Length: 269
Length: 269
Image (cartoon, helix red, strand yellow):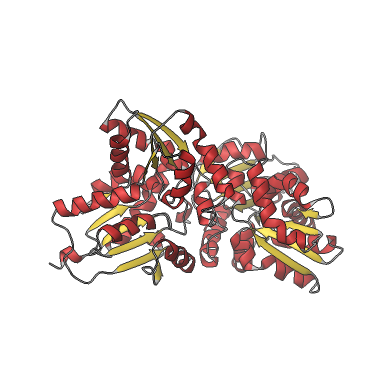
């Protein structure tokens, strides 16, 4: 069926959502993707709920012009602020990155104490705590906003003593409260997986919502009989600014997949 | 005259331009100010020329609704990309922060080697090098983009070992090439003045474009007979997002001046 081979829309404030796109490509190689990164208005993590809802709505309108069959909000802040309202506005499946990570964290913890790291927006929304408590209200959730990690990743300091120092400061309270499960609640953070691994130690499970979200998407498409058959697979990438810089960074996250990146005037949507 | 007591419009991508507003208030206490910080679309330093021109044009339209008598672009990136085009579009005086800093640096250097630090946008525009060479083509200009400094300032790490380490890395090439004048080419950087002072050593003059721009504005208003007389002085502040956070941060830069901050939907202009 032609409809099944329509692409999945994936969006983020910038490059971070590529960690989700990468997992979708790895777990569902038959699926096509149209990705949008809002690089003109990045970052989302320090913006208000109203602004994020407006920006996300514009992006969803753009993705619908590309005839997507489903949408993944590959941004924790936008998932926290805009998912519920967007669900009521469109008639195709739409999912965020919070739910799958929250479920995995709730299943993983043995001591009942879960840490969550994310941007200021995601953490102040309290969305992970709320979602984890809907699953099991007895779990303790300890949150920490880490506003410097996105700039550090975007500056390329992924394996660097400064990033180690900043992460050590951010997680010191989580460590002293003996969590045993840590949600990497920002799509940039899987790029710092090894550093979090080393600093948190082997006793703490790291939850990567990008991986869990791709798994959840696969289940959803399967349940709703929306999986692509063996049609031609394509991956298109669009941004609102700085296409070349996006392509360069994207190539380091998903080698070989990002060829041309289109520029969209997203404020028109 | 009523016209003379109209306010000066000052804008920046966010809070950084407050260092310019602070200097204007200090040097011209009779002048009123309408400040706009584009906190919904901050930062400008990593965005393209076309995007910055568009955003700056919207802000100028907003400021004109406030009947400003002159405009100061209190953002190095916007000055670099948008000043020339905005000059052709409006009929009141408009100035950026580049020119005054460039002249001071050119006058200050004895060895003929000037360093410039700024955001990626300002540095890649080459505006300081171009402006300094228009003043004296024999001066050597060594530039360095410092994309982490704005996030570090906004995280409050103004006196911190991590910020010291990052600045030391950024300026190592400038130090080894023995500059004797350094332009702090981003409106956030005056907040790191003491750190730059310590790391660069006493032999290097630090040029603060915020201070120099306020001096240049005073000369301009005096020459054009536009100085305010002793009317009522007011300072109004507007942003595109996160008004409360702006007020808090602003109070630390200009204590006692920022009371209420209004929210503007800048995309409508």
